[in-house]
Image 1 (cartoon, rainbow, N blue to C red):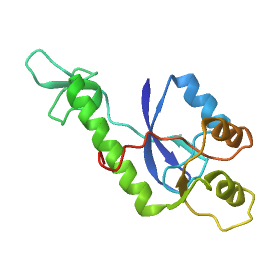
Image 2 (cartoon, rainbow, N blue to C red; image 1 turned 90 degrees about the vertical axis):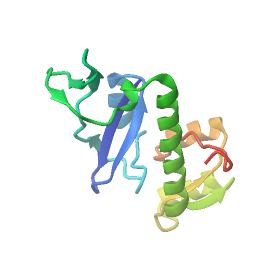
Image 3 (cartoon, one colour; image 1 turned 120 degrees about the horizontal axis):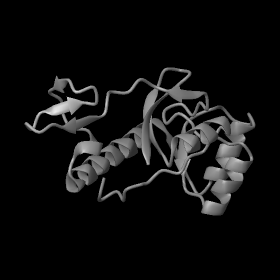
Image 4 (cartoon, rainbow, N blue to C red; image 1 turned 135 degrees about the vertical axis):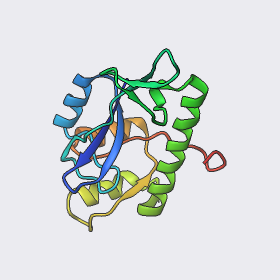
Length: 155
């Protein structure tokens, strides 16, 4: 899995995981990747910090070998810490979506199509749909994404 920082044409920066670099290229070309903030499918990779790893002295070292002092990245943390960081990011994502998007529940496919086809004003929405319906929507060209959603008591 590869984590990329992405940027939409409106300047919003967000993160997304991909199985491989080729999977990223294919999904972006097919319009399957959309901005987590505004829904734009015009996406490019954003500049990212260098991957850091621990040196022998316990200092973190950049791949070039230069010594740096930096907070660890999820890739360099032990598994429990990485899982905690992932949980924190998922909580942050849920708060962002709930604060900036309209919950439409099971009407999600219908509302997403209305927005996509210009029958209603564009806005961020979220809700539920089946895996089959999500695939149909993607095949139709709708910029939708399935995200891991923590239960409210976990968030």
